Amino acid sequence: MGAELGWQKIRWAEERMLTLGSLSSSALESGVLRGVRVGLVLHIEAKTAVLALKLARAGAEVHLAASNPLSTQDDVVEAVRGELAAVYARRGESSEEYSEALRRVLAARPDYIIDDGGDAITLSHREGVSSVKGACEETTTGVIRVRNLERSGLLRYPVIAVNDAYTKHLFDNRFGSGQSVVDGFMRATNILLAGKRVVVVGYGWVGRGVAQRLRGMGARVVVCEVDAVRAIEAYMDGFEVEPLLEAAGNCDAIITATGDVRVVREEHFRVMRDGTILANAGHFNVEVDVDHLEKHSSSKRVVRPNVTEYVYAGRRLYVLGEGRLINLVAADGHPIEVMDMSFSAQFLALRYLVENSSRLQPKLMKLPEELDTLIAKTFLKAHGVRIDELTEEQKHYLESY
Ligand code: ADE
Figure (cartoon, rainbow, N blue to C red):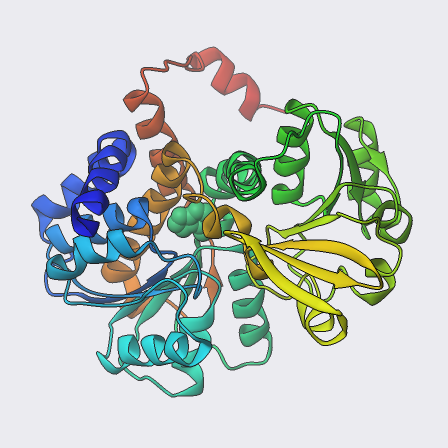
């Protein structure tokens, strides 16, 4: 039953992942991925399965593990288990099981890693896995970590910052998170957003998307920022901008999207109203200081799936999805069309590494612009959207001075 449900979701997604479908067919024909061993460490849901299957059908040997202990969909795992070289994941795995799964992927001595969050890339460096010739990284958090590795002079192979491709972050981080974070929040709580005062912490691409979509649902959105320019952007986008300590005491919910640690912490918990809901959209479960609530609450109970109530300083505070990324814990992650582009970027990045790794330096690099453009053009074509072309005169005009 589990596997059948998994296949239903995979087929539904695959029929809509038109860009990846088109771009992966040429890899299949050319045989460029045949025999290539890939460590795939991603959030395991239906769209991820589509990517894994495309790689496997193109001849790659795929070893799959989760990039978060709580984002795995077990029915999808059951569906793909027999189709890939190995799958090591289950929803709710302990952090030891999570790390062990990464170790097992690396023990297969992958040629390349496709990572989400940087755990596999950093572990391959820590453990000196010499088989790896290159990697592709999905998220802002992962790219920051790889950049730090590079700055420390420790990076040992080329890494493509897939996150930084235009066809990735402009749509995935903004529209993808915008919809999926609100989706996860609503599925977890089933509360009405219209009229609620919701605080979005961080106005990067994710925060922008979440704030916009919450506003679309009728929420009264407050943005908190530490960056002056981003704060101006939020202000001019029409949001209230306040310090978190003020906003926390006067809101129904707080959603973090910063990528940083202990963003919502004791000083904020102390001023919150009874019933305040806390959720996180960032990669790691470090943005809401759940450890503090665990240690200092007078009681804790799960009140519905993905909602834990802490009675803290006499008030009920609700943490969604243990403070882990709510769009994948309580919903299906980003919408299909968005992951179609993101995973097309992953697919082409991997192909680029396979074809070029011998001449690439151990550096963090962007997805080549022509591949970004290819994804955009393929997506538009697949969706029947036509655009204009510059005339020769216009091209010449733009090149003149
Ligand atoms: N589905 C698979 N990977 C995802 C990601 N990084 N964010 C949202 N949804 C996803």
